[in-house]
Image (cartoon, rainbow, N blue to C red; front, side, top):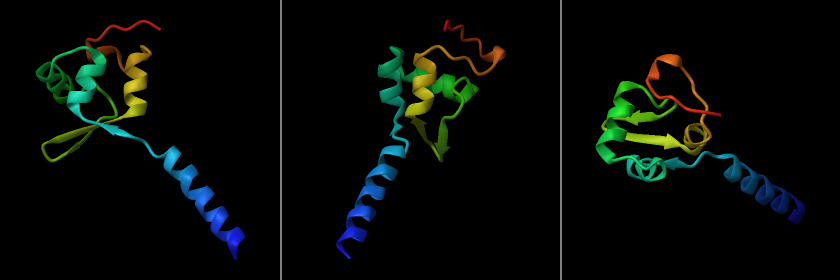
Length: 84
């Protein structure tokens, strides 16, 4: 019985680690060094691929932010030039 509990706890911890942390637009703006309005405009244009919109709220997964920070481009027509 105790072994199952330990295994369940371990699996729950691993699942939590795999879960994507979501960031707000303000957090993204701070990480990228841009203004809040500029970040909202980029999201509205579709420049930040992978961002999720819920009604009026934007959520950006850490994986998307890592891609942006590391200079990985997703499309050529975004107008954002990055280096790898």
